[in-house]
Length: 61
Image 1 (tube, one colour):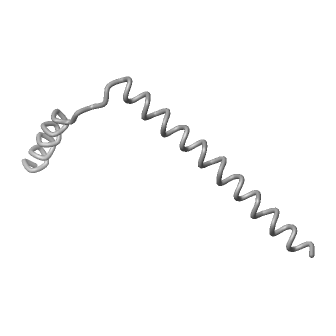
Image 2 (image 1 turned 60 degrees about the vertical axis):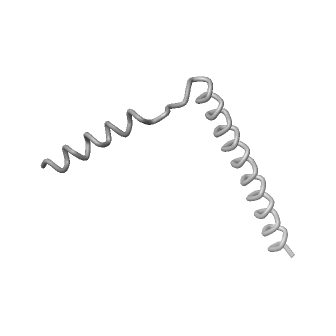
Image 3 (image 1 turned 90 degrees about the vertical axis):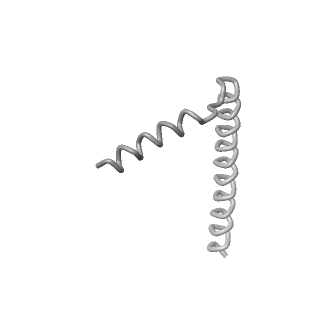
């Protein structure tokens, strides 16, 4: 049981050393991540639609 307690003490000690982002940085990073996710979702939806249409066109021949 002592090893588990030592582990959590070390975790707390290391977490105090972490440099957490400021609110402005966090907002900026969040906007970048969300815009990237939206862009990638639209891109893959467009690619998927294009491939689906190609298969439909190919199967009609």
